Figure 1 (tube, helix red, strand yellow):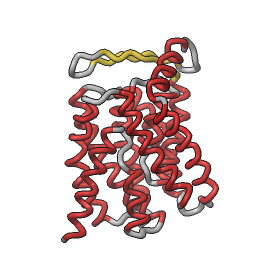
Figure 2 (cartoon, helix red, strand yellow):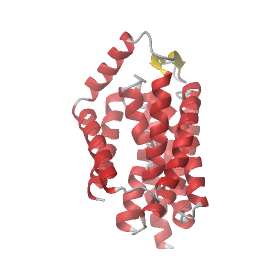
Figure 3 (cartoon, rainbow, N blue to C red):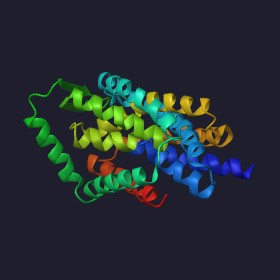
Figure 4 (cartoon, rainbow, N blue to C red):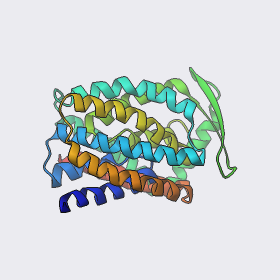
Length: 272
């Protein structure tokens, strides 16, 4: 009983923080399952994705009320990420992961350093690139008005977003961390999405892709449902609070929070 309560409490923390930064929380769940509960890699990835799905679904509902989800872009990106998510679930059993983990860990740590030291610069640079961007293979212009009347206008190349999303889906399912932790900085830095729109839209994408990844892992016997549902229950309660905090938090601080999450994952991958 006490162990189940611990899982629920941990899931609540995952729900709040993961939703605040748009990352889903898998970056916390996987190290916890590997280092504290001693799950093997496949079980940690599969169990984590169930928690990520429940957290993302709850967070998506909260962000939908704020009207900060770019549904059209999110559906395109989720569609591109789904085949990658399926491949990642199968690849976890066959891929030699040591060098792969080091490479991904280095990349995530580098991005974390940029966001942690210069979050305002990262936002300004993305906005400047968006202002200069007039072409691309599939140029898209978007305009959203949230529940508070705040207007968000941005443009991006959908082709770049689709290619990016495929690899995000693959990495998220392979590592069990959920794609949000990679998708959010990519949306901000490469596609010039506003930080608040990227976190909300990332959660919407994550709810779709994590469902596919979790189902694939479950079919392969990688999910421990007791811990997954206990943590998921806590995450479902914590996610709306994280979304509310995000609404009151500046874009630069959201990126700083995401940077800490990236650094945690990067360091874990180095020493896994």
